Image 1 (cartoon, one colour):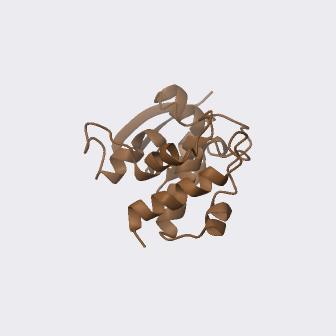
Image 2 (spheres, one colour):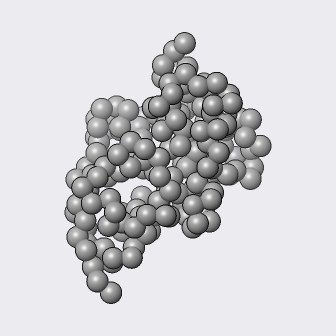
Length: 168
């Protein structure tokens, strides 16, 4: 199987790795970089558990090949707090991002498996719409599935985070 060297930025840090041509981005993150916050769920792009930010926009990492991120910037759940703090390593205590804090505060997580994907999708949503209403949050997260919470706490978590991040 052919291998390719990819150079990209992952969570603010330069990354240069040789990968098999057909390696999925989700597998690259989990198996090669040991960033296990990105979950494998359906592996068909339906559940959203594998959501990450690619150049600031949410993508399903199970639908992309690792070679497709050549020269681009990835942010995973592990890098989210550092990104808000101004870059990788900017906050050595790795404080939580307001979305992560709100999910804990509002009970927007139960088993936690889907939570990283929801948080990454919410980060994308709040980047595009800093003051969403509940319907806009539901629409913005419709590519993510949760079997535990019933979604009410997830929507509340995003609304609380929006308030923390952007005020009225």
